[in-house]
Image (tube, rainbow, N blue to C red; front, side, top):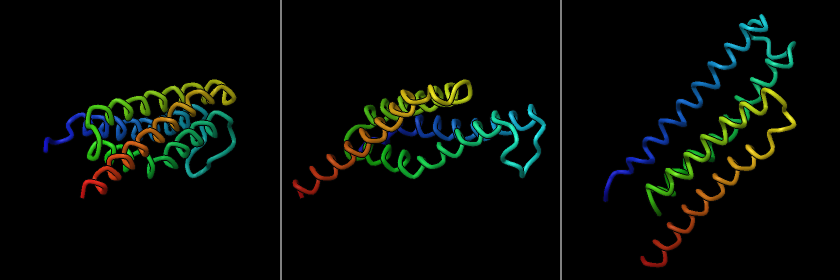
Length: 132
C-alpha cells in the first residue's frame, strides 16, 4: 500500500487554514481594538470569531472523513475533494467577513465536500466488508 501523500498535503493545508483563521481573529481584534477575552463589541470581530468557530465545528467531520476516503477509496480523489473543502472555507471566510448573507454557496460547497468524503469512506469500508 502506498502512503497517502496527496491527502497528507491537503491535511497540512487544512492545518494551515485553521492557523490562519486563528491569526485572522487576532488581526481583527487588534484592528477594532477589542482585547481578549471579549468576543463581542464590534460586528467585524464577531464575524471573524464566528468564521473560526464554524470551521472548528466541522473539524471532527472533515479530518476523519478525508482520511477514511483516502485509505478506503483513493488518495488522489480524497485530496481533490479535501482541497475543494479548503478553497470553500477560504471563500466562506472572505464572503462572511464582507457580507454574512452571501456565505451560502461557500458553506454549501464545504458541506458537500464533507458529504462526498463520508460517502467515499462508507463505500470503501462497505466494499471491504463485502469482500472479507
